[in-house]
Amino acid sequence: RQIVGELREAIRSDQLVLYYQPIVELATGRIEGCEALVRWKHPLHGLIMPDQFIPVAEATGLIAELGRWVLRAAVGQLRRWRDAPATAHQDFSMRINVSAADLQSLEFVDDVSEALADAGLTPASLVLELTESAIIRNNELDRYTLASLHRLGVGLEIDDFGAGYSSMGYLRKLPVDRVKVDRQFVKDLGKDPSQLDFLAAVQQVIRSCGLEGIWEGIETAEQAEALRSIGCASGQGYYFGRPLPEAEFTEQLARQV
Ligand code: G
Ligand code: G
Ligand code: MN
Ligand code: NA
Image (cartoon, rainbow, N blue to C red; front, side, top):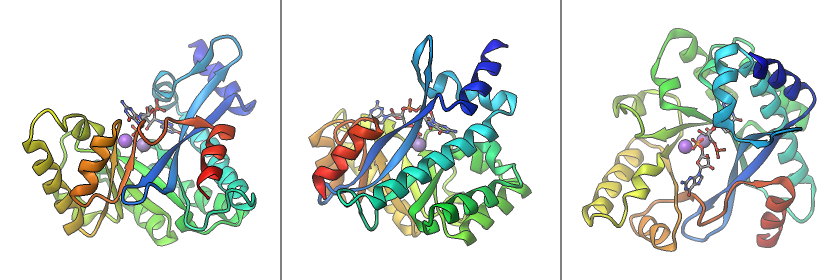
């Protein structure tokens, strides 16, 4: 279809743009990292959200090229923030969303490694977010890629945890270090008093597996405080900041340093 050609052209002519959403340390409010979220600045249709074109990219094989663009752009941005005195932040990490198809690509690990080396960044400054559905397929190539990425030293995070048919079993087996809990769990906070007990139990499971939890979809101060009160370390959501273009996010970062 026409959109496929346009998207290919968009990747090559830099019509894609990254927005950045803060990830915050709940105890202090400090921005500890950000998630890069891609948008398409279409010359005629304006800003197009990823749910409108990521599925197209995945269905047509363009996702590999798109993923490489996102990787390069995100790593380059982190380099710029590290170099600017106002934002030079020692343990600030960049997160990117990785598609299931990326794990199937034999070059993916080399792409990540080269992008980091070219930008002069340590692997630990990059975290890859992988959806449960991508991880759970659990085939040989995925396992090999995950193990290689883990060995390289980039952070590996399960995204949208609990959104699908989650299996607790894999939390202990996979070489991941973080779990981002799906926002539906936080959304239900306040509806029912037992929901906080439930979230505390989820948090315990994550901890007992030696993993770090990141809680997403935090939209109010009450939600942030409730999560902090049960010992959750990190959060993300509109309460702390919406995804913002480079200039605005840079201001938000610079303000706190
Ligand atoms: O950005 P939004 O705020 O609308 O994100 C919608 C969805 O698109 C999310 O599920 C997110 O994981 C996905 N997404 C956003 N940016 C990227 C990206 O760079 N690569 C991939 N594969 N998915 C992305
Ligand atoms: O699926 P993934 O977690 O990668 O993508 C993040 C998506 O969640 C983006 O579409 C982003 O805009 C959205 N998002 C981020 N914070 C909030 C929030 O507090 N509430 C809601 N409803 N959506 C959010
Ligand atoms: Mn994500
Ligand atoms: Na998510």
